[in-house]
Image (cartoon, rainbow over all chains, first blue to last red):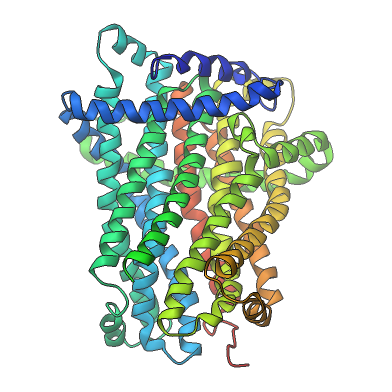
Length: 284
Length: 283
């Protein structure tokens, strides 16, 4: 079983069945042994592709041009949704936290609460949602379309390795963009919270700004950006894997994008819980 | 379409056309949403079997997602993790100021008002929403929707309104699972992970859990379910451009519905809890 070539036809054969039908038939997994083997094979081939990507990154020539193109592509599809998602997300968190703070007579600490919530949780979570929901879906749709048009097979025939030419730059582009997006998301979150707290909940502006750094320091900020980098890497690998193993026409591409969203969210929440646990211990 | 207009000032006319297209798209979407909602009675009465079938399918998922247990398991998993985050971060912040005994209060307050509705919305958009876009988009590309209209079936009622009804029906049990998952995960983390006495946790949890908050958050979840289904069915129903178009429509729908659901959560939270927050710690 060579890393990526072997599972690809298997997937397309499996997903090819319900393509024509509108919905509903999950008849392909009748036998229990087969039902267990399919997810295992998926997981195995995902890790094989991740390994291939790591090897290709170290051993082959890096496709700079594609990397720059992809960076621009991801930035274009994710900056606007990122801002639109961050501002309401952090405002609602500030709203709920400030009710609590003013109830115990500590409304002056609103800035500390906003900074804590944004840097430790809402910032990274919103980055997840943007990177997974906007960047990774667009990337998977783009790669999936190329796979359906058999462009990847054509590349293999010409002796070009799709992992080196397409996957490595995409994964790196999403990682870099997650890192950069995280800063935009954090700044937009804190600024949104500031305006909401000052204008709607009548917190003193000076007190808000002054208490920003009460609970958050350099180590928390570094942890926040480390999280974002990990999210970007995981989302990029998942999006590329689902993109290059797509099969079965229009329904197949749609399902691949759907699965990308679900798998990235699941993976990213797991990463977030683990890293938060480690970080809470490490920065204590 | 827009290329046929005058080429006297290409940049200006292109900008004007883009603006007009965007404006028209908003109008089109609004019209589609009203049409869908208006046709809901017809879907429930005439296409009852189809609506029931959609409910069954959405709760358990299609294709590879069904292997993971469908929307129920995924939403439960996401909210379980969100609850664990609230526990981890909250316990640490509380013990910084020496009141870690209030961890149960934090779960009753933050999970009910914030974590459960927000994360459940994300789960809904990712599972049942994106699934509906992929299905409808594939039907549009395969010209199945045109075929339905040719044989005299009202496609919007049969395909879209039935899905919206099914989505809202599925949201309610799904949100029950989500709320229970957040409470359970915070409790088990605090009690088993950090070793707090279960009695202390339960006391503060029961004291501060307002049943009305829970009911309001159910209303938020229903609203979000409706919005997710409307946005996702619109993008699926109007997909174009071959197999690649279906993927693009799914991605675009996820982006749009995430923004819409978070905004709806914010607006409804402000409307429900008001500036004072309807919350009394000292009572």
